[in-house]
Image (tube, rainbow, N blue to C red; front, side):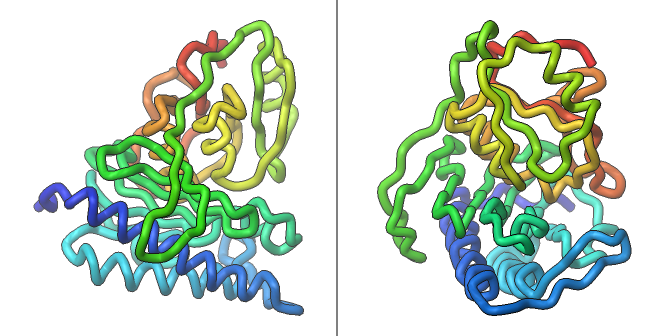
Length: 270
């Protein structure tokens, strides 16, 4: 049975607060002298910060929305649950950035409805940037002071109007490869920046970049919140192979290659 549509005002309030609280937990560990790094079954790293943030967010979401399926990166048992409408969490996206103390890591919480991420929050605590969809689905960036129970000053976000002779490209900091560079070479690029984690979606949402191609493995929890933020700013995310919309709730929650962009970019074929 599908859950009823959530109260979006409550959803916004809850996921924003949980992201901020998780950010505090993450930064306490980030600023400590040392922290343990373990390897998961797929050899990807996991830290105490991933686990502590996951526990906090999961408990908060289950208390607030007990009838909604919850999928979270750090709880493998949740990956076997299937639904078209669900909450999905990556408590610390950019663990490698965290381990190397580079700051480009984010807390990600999203709500997916019928395969589409309609609401989300992306919080980069080390960079003090907070992006989220408001109660009507428009994306804002909050500029502070990041109080837990009160939304501070916000500015609405809108994607760029791309200049196809001088595009701004953002690409992965940790996962660049020749295939990505070859695809980017099809465009007239004015400038290129690299960023870690889901911040790349947010840079397209703010207009700081026009296009973000990802020719590499990602999971739905890596992308859902950033995708929601970009959607709410007027952007799009499509599959790399056939340019159809990137959908969620796929078997195993694995993504194909994709392109996130501002409408107006003259997209090149794969």
